[in-house]
Image 1 (cartoon, rainbow, N blue to C red):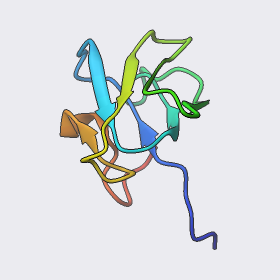
Image 2 (image 1 turned 120 degrees about the vertical axis):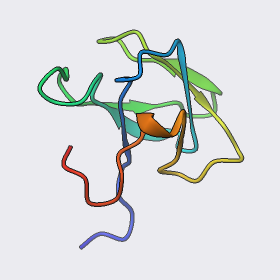
Image 3 (image 1 turned 180 degrees about the vertical axis):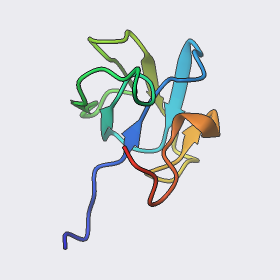
Length: 82
């Protein structure tokens, strides 16, 4: 099993901005069954990126762990089905 996994985030809460601790991640739009194709996004050195499917603005936050989000409900809990 790989040591590094790509975290998944969604915007089921419907907020205008989701802050995350990762720069590389997958967006699912919303939780199933209302999700969109799971798309890999990479901010590179930028501080934010917009998902081309759901238009969620994701902003990098240095104070969050790689799989953490603000609001917390926008992240998937460990072991939660994606």
